[in-house]
Image (tube, rainbow, N blue to C red):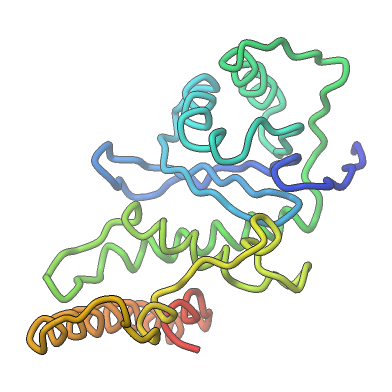
Length: 234
């Protein structure tokens, strides 16, 4: 195993894996999810995809959805077939219009810390898939797992990571995103809603909070795991 050199800034080194065998979700019936984790900050990105996507399909998806936020990675670490990783790496450079020197690139196997992080994220996604199919919100809409992914990603980014003592968002960007709790508790000083419209806003916020609490309650009773409770309460 090649020893991994620790990164000095976000998105230098990325751990990559796929969560497969998921129920069809989204408008394109996605059945897998590409998981990218920044080794420096532990920030994740979840990209719904198809299990039979090629290396070029994956490269184009990363180009369209990730690169504008992160820049080009220095290294990709994965336990998947080295040929797939190398092909993906080459295709990313082709999209950039640059050439990759394979004599200087390396693809070490993932280490224990990365394996645990990836496994935690995979477990979270699978649980969200299961409960997303069952839950109906206050408007009677059933969520598939693709609609829940953004909340899951935000929850992980704003949770303190055990290995760093800080949130991934803080290490990556230097600040924590505002959460629903922060918005609800803040006094409204710039707008002056009428009594009736304010009641509608408040009722809607309470319904949304109840929907999320319902997911959390079911997950905690069945699995004993807390996932995103800090999104709605302190």
